[in-house]
Image (tube, rainbow, N blue to C red):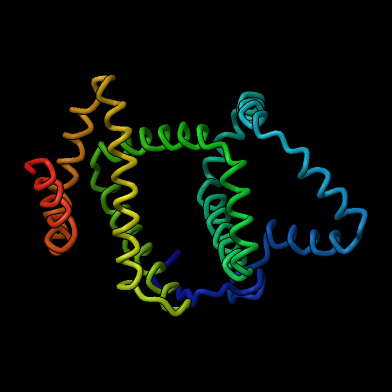
Length: 239
């Protein structure tokens, strides 16, 4: 996304945005819209969705990549577009879920949490974290500049959406701090488990290094948020 792009929190219909030509997704959406108007097609889609087998997804990936290695390069080159499509699709799902009555949204979230494979999500998150550490540990100037630009664009989009939805960054901050405590408790439990594997010292060293960089880059954040949390933890340990 370029720096001069303005997101008002509402997306244009595919193909209506100036300078953007409809692509595969826009064409697929138009075709699907017409097909779903046919009851038989809609019923077939529901049957297919009810027979999804997530456990076979890794085999599908291996088959595609091993049978045609060139396709791997094509997928890597298309990964920004695929990720952007996933992000925009997720944003629209969240927007639609947020518009339904609370009783229905609660049922949806309950079913999602009940059926989602938490263990596999944990394994995938661990692999993602390890991959990120390998990349971020290189500290190359090009990667640092890209991360800085990414962070600025992320912050801009985040604030624009809050404003468009009638919220404010300040109002969200208090909820974020409460959420941080939940994450900290979760992290503490996992740190205790890692202690048995001898990985705690390395994790603490990495966290300390990250806090030092955070203090250098964002001293106000450290004074207003991180320092009070650290002081509270010290008092709990000494008390």
